[in-house]
Length: 570
Image (cartoon, rainbow, N blue to C red):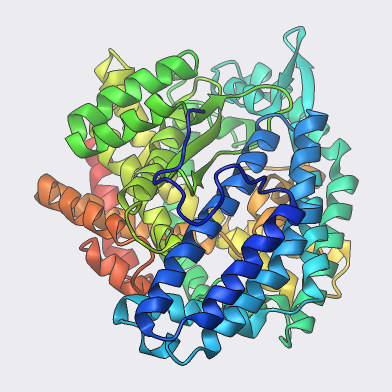
């Protein structure tokens, strides 16, 4: 990584060790003294600029240790550095940050700040309301447990084709035409996951207990209620999420099952099995859009060059600063993410590319997050350089749809481009039932805190029956019952999944607008991104030219648009 502060430090010492609490103590004493000395709203705004500088520096310090740890979970030095943040620095910081927010919220000038600070003011009030000193240790334990989940998942490998392979690498085999080979690879992967089933269940049980304690300490009846407050979900409720699940069941599950019936007919099998879900239904060779992360970067740059000069510049910024780690390898944490290096105001993209079409979609997705970070980098408050997740995912999912017409950069055969675009649109349809399953599972989990393992498995299976496909899992019931272990959000970021569904509806609206007027749609999109988190959620959607709505009124027409587009790609 080639990184440096976006602006020279004015308040934070240039050579300070941000992982040394002894060095941090005078800095926080100064922040407290300056805040107490501020008399006018203008002086308070200056203090907020200083606090933003400190917050950004600390965020980047901890963020880099997280990135380095996930890039190589089996490196003891990286693990030690990350655990120092979790076990020492964060617990030291939290009470001091809370004290500052407590003083700020009670400051006579805080309520008189200009309207620009309204969203921040609401957030500060929420943080003060939720903070409990006794929860600091619990949150530390929670972070350590999620790191154990990452380490356990990242260490999963199997022997296949005469060599050791990671589970993401094994996913490539599921796209091959040889059914017996697909089955063998699928079974080997499933067997390896089941080896750690008990260990992952134990980690999750400990997380559930901790999260229940956190909620009760903050005077909430359950962790769901606490999380909705903690995530500052001011614009929708748990019941709205449940209504969303029901709408998915009504409008989208039948479409997803119909796609599977067509798949079954084309494959010519008696029934679909779990290893028949990724292969091309016409048994065409797997799409292999690139070899290696370097080629993925070059071809993605060509796409953004064609799409929009502003996005082209943003992507070039990533490459110039080398803030990417794309290739899968042993010891790397699972999944993909974008993290903002807050002091440098640069995004970092992490993923596990193995050369499949899904990797193309993942990179343009994470690039959308990266573009959001760059577009909002000039917001003066550190807190406003991020946004609610429901809108952050609009930034990323829109990029999948907007770049799709340019995926020919990865393929010389027009038929392969058509396949890639068709699979992507079908993937959107298939995503919603999975989103509803993951969300509904967590609603039940956290409102039934005394459930047993057997009850948990039974409820998960009932959701698979409700939202799942037509594939036959006979003989693999244990694997089906533990499929949720693969969804890292359930372990690491509870209740963070419905946001993807809300955002996907927003992204589909951006896509529909682009079909009418591409430039205007991109102008609106970038305008929304530039707002960062400075507006309430519905206003961010409005800034991007779309509506914040995830009811039948929006879902129905958008699904018809997806079906229509699929019809044109046949």
